[in-house]
Amino acid sequence: MDETLARNCEIKKYICKAFAEEEEDVRFARENSLARGLKEIQVPSNVGKLIYLLAKLRAPKRALEIGTLGGYSTLWLAKALPQNGRLISLEFEAKHAAIAKEHIVKAGFSAQVEIRIGKAADLLSSMIASKEEPFDLIFIDADKENYPKYLDLAYSLSTSGTLILSDNLIPKGEKIDDPHPNNEEACSIYHFNKLLSLHPKIESIITTNIVGEKGRLDGLGISLVT
Ligand code: SAH
Ligand code: DHB
Ligand code: MG
Image 1: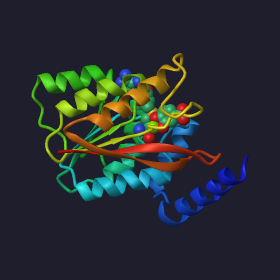
Image 2: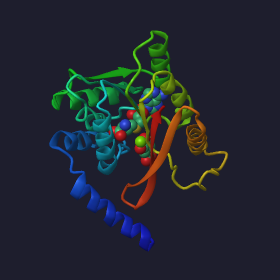
Image 3: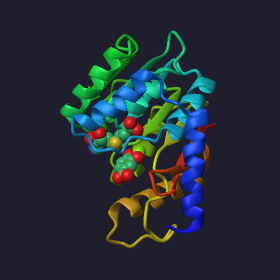
């Protein structure tokens, strides 16, 4: 590992310890998800704290998450909701949803957080068709191949002032903004980034954050619907 990556590891540890300590229920959700066989692909706690703080600033009455996994990021977001705030989280895998539900109940958020099971694109389309109220905050973190579609659907469920957060905007191991054509995920993400950066009604930035144990940088998109 080169010197910069080693230093990044130290910086990440420092930030997580000093600023992003997990509360007991959040730590349990992470550890129990791993114990129950889920992949360890939840946001790191430094990113969890960042989306929590951004959500707190936005104080959403209606928040939406695309990609629940074991409910780790769901809990960070739930903790930022105002009293009358609600969070809907979409998950394709029934097993993931069931484990996440346990974590949400255990943390005392079952009245505020609802998990919907199905393909996110289908669930979002039916929300649009049934004219559900727009969301104040949307966190995109599911299958990367569908990110461009999710942006379109998320925008349809947005209003002026909606905060859209998008995880994993810097794919690993690829030339920046020039991924190998065989890497569908990376191609889709860079396409998404282009759509985001050029969108006439959305103002955005990618913030880089140190993720994983090797000092790698990933990107979190922060976008405001104007
Ligand atoms: N937000 C979580 C991590 C989500 S990982 C956290 O940080 O804690 C991505 C999740 O999206 C996985 O649980 C996966 O099953 C789910 N997923 C993948 N494709 C999906 C789809 N088409 N619709 C809904 N969920 C999907
Ligand atoms: C991975 C990380 C993520 O944050 C995600 O949403 C999906 C996959 C990964 O490291 O493979
Ligand atoms: Mg992610």
